[in-house]
Structures are given as structure tokens and as C-alpha cells.
Length: 209
Image 1 (cartoon, rainbow, N blue to C red):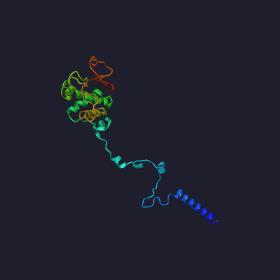
Image 2 (cartoon, rainbow, N blue to C red):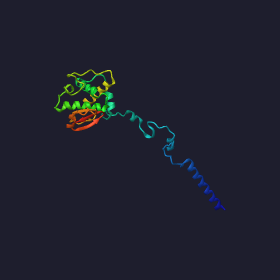
Image 3 (cartoon, rainbow, N blue to C red):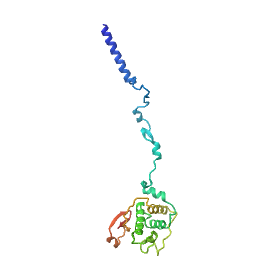
Image 4 (cartoon, helix red, strand yellow):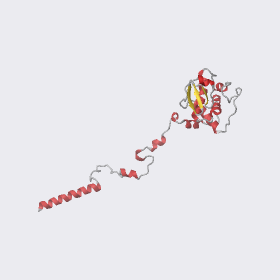
């Protein structure tokens, strides 16, 4: 009888201990100076996510600075856009961009600027940007060595200035090889185009080396 009572008592004690473990967790698991977690992983299901949530460092993200050479062309041109160019050479380059390609996407405008720069560096054309742009019978907007005046209050001119600065100062990766010295609109077919190596097409312009 005593043995039976003792067995029942032991069984009751075991059941009570197991119940305490399920409800309250191990009795001594978080003792020893270690704080018990105040939130479970399930709390993330209802918590709003934002900077710093789940271990993300919002301070580091806020202080990160994108290097200038990884900015998009749009951002580069926007940073450099303005009414005034840096010098006379950039002025001539901006005029070429404005009158030759102001309706083109920025890559197309940059490509036109690169052709002018390639010519000046080639040894086959005048050695200055202004000399290249003003050379007779090369750019249709130039009349007897004189350039018309751009609308300096327009956004197109401000963008052309930005493109000229980006190109002249090498802020963006080159689109064209140094051998690319010619281009024409895709709606014309000049005879000289058949004698050259077609390089690429950007917007409405076809470029040749």
C-alpha cells in the first residue's frame, strides 16, 4: 500500500514538473546573470519594418556616400548643368552638343561630345575643341566659322553644359573608342559612311571609326 502511494506521489511530481517546464520554461535556464529575452522571433511578424530592424544599421546607411564615378549619367549631368561653362573650350563643346544633339538622350549627347574630343586628339583635325567645331564644312550649324547663339535660359542648354563638363573632365566612362571620328543621323546616308567602319548607333546618330 505504501509502495503504491509512493508511486502515485512520484508520478504526480513528475507531471507537475513537466507542466512547469512547458508553461514557464526551464526553471534555471536563464539564471547566472544572463537576461531572459523579452521578445520572441514571432514578434517580427507584427512589428513594422524600418531602418535598423532585424540588425540593419540605419546610421551606417544614412552616412554612406556614393563615389562620383558610380553615379548614373543622369545624376552626373544634373550635378554639372548650368548656364555657364568652365572655359572657352567647354563653351565650344557645349555648343556642339546643344546644336547637334539636344533632342537626343544623354548618352547620345555625350557621344557627340566624345567625337569632338576624339578629333582634337587625333592629329587629323584641329588640335583644339573650338578649332574642331568651327572647322569649315564639318558641322552644319556653323556658318562661315561662326556659331549661332544658344538659348541659354533653356533646360536643353543647361544639360549641354553639363554634358560638356562631364565629357571634358572625364567624369563618366567613355562610350566610344578614340578612333571614332564621324557620325551622321540615321535618316541620311552619306557616301563617306560606306567607306568607314560602323561603330555603334546611339539614339538617332550612327557613329563610325
